[in-house]
Every structure is written in C-alpha cells, then in structure tokens.
Amino acid sequence: MKTLGVPTKESLKEQKDGYVSSLNGQKDAYVSSIVPADLGLKIKQLKKQKADKKAKSKLLRTEYEGLSMVKAYTKFGSGDRTIIEEFYVLRDNDAVKPLPYIREVMRYYQRSGRVSSSIIRDEGTGLLLHGPYKRYQNGELIEEGFYYGGMKDGRWEKYDANFMLLDKTRWHRGVPAESRLTYYDSTHRKIKEIVPVDYGKVRGTYMAFYENGNLAEEGKYDNGVKVGRWTEYHPATPNGRRLRKKLTQHASSQWDTDFEPFVLTEWDEKGKVIFERSKEKVVQEDETEN
Image: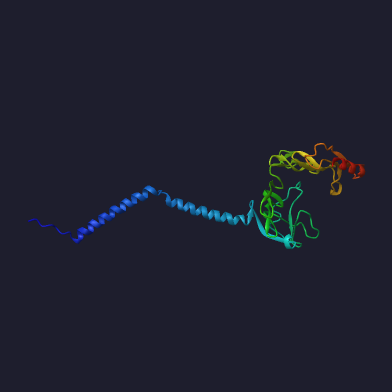
C-alpha cells in the first residue's frame, strides 16, 4: 500500500517563494516593456523644465529684453471716466537712450503722477517706460502693449468696453515693425528715411532726414496716399530750433482722389514767411471739395 506524502512547511514555503519570484519576474518584464529605461532621466528633465519655466516667469516680471524694470501705476479721472495705467519703468533710466528720430517717447513723471511724451517743466527728464503697459477705463482693459526705453515695442491692442478687439499694431523700437528704414551709412547710424508700413500697407507717419540728422520732411500716409498737412524743414537749425521751409496741404483721406495738393506757406532760412496762401482761398477750396 502506497502512502501519499504530506507537504512539509519547508516545501510549501519553497513553492510559495518560487511562485512569488515568478510573478515578480513577470511583473518586472511587463513594466520594462511599457516603461522607458530612461524614465528617471526624463523625470529629472521635466522637473528642470518646470523650474526653468518658473524662473523665466519670475524674470518676465522684473525684466524686459534683458533690462531690469520696476512696476508703477497712475490713476486719474472719476466715475465712468476713471483711468488706471499699469506699467513699468527702467530701474536704471540711463540703460537705454531713445532714438533721436522717435517723436513719441513715453515717460513717467512721479511728482505729478503723469505718463506723457511731453517734457513736463520742473520734473526733470522723467522715467522711461519699459516693459508691459495696460490702460483701464472704469475697470475695463482698453489698451495693452509693451515699451522699450519709452518707445512702443511688440504687439499693441485696443479694445472696446466689451473687450472686443478694435485695433492691433506691431512696433519695433518706436516705429511700425514692418517699416522700411534707409540710412546714409553702412553702419546704420545716420537715418535717411522711415517709410511706415503696417500689415503690408504704407500707413502712418513718414519721416525723411538730412545727413546731419535734422528732420527734412514729415507727413502721414493712408494706404500709400499722402494725407493731411506735410511739412518740409530747412537743414540748418540755429540755436537748436527747427525751422519750417514749406507746408503743403494734401487730401484728408485716401478716398479723395480728385484733391489737388497745394502749398499753404513757405519760409526762408531765417524763418520769414515768403509765401502764404490766402485764408479765403483755402476756405473756398475746402468748401468746393466738400
């Protein structure tokens, strides 16, 4: 008669250990098949990217184009016409020198709490705006963009009271980003002409310069057509004064194709009027055009 062997504790433990070991081996093989071998490295890279992104975000709040800035704001008006401007100024006001041919350079005057492109008497030169700019009316954002050393830079947008986009423009150091600039020299230090181009259209303020850097002519284009009053200047500026040479009237818009430009006034090199169109004739021509 054959006797069935009863498993001992030791044999059962060996079987269990072998089974568990087999399962672990299968688990490791499965995990290895679905998890990349360089997972640890990728996790480190993701953590580094997250840290870099956080550091960059913090840097964007303190620097723009590599230059340190300080946040400021102004508030004026009352009721529905309350205006709040949020902006930044250069920490070192001498870090950027605005280009001499840029007509609108924005500065913050702390004493009066005003942001202006005009020089305010008894307040020094003002602090140059630099970095993000936002303008609110009655709590609603109506305009935003960037400044670089007081000059418009990057994308600018305007909105209505319902935050619907009204206008968008692109700038680079104070001139429309697509503008065509020509120079007298190969080093691009002596500006000759600025042709304003906005989204492929010649539109905005045109400026031409003499080789000595003085303004020679300025006026506005509307879709490639001269509009409004254009002014020519004499090359010499005694006592730092800019002397006008000729003032020419063009059509008020690009659609007025029948308008014939005419000279309003001419001056000699001393600033004396040598020709002036009679006001009566100007009024009559305006009425005829209308």
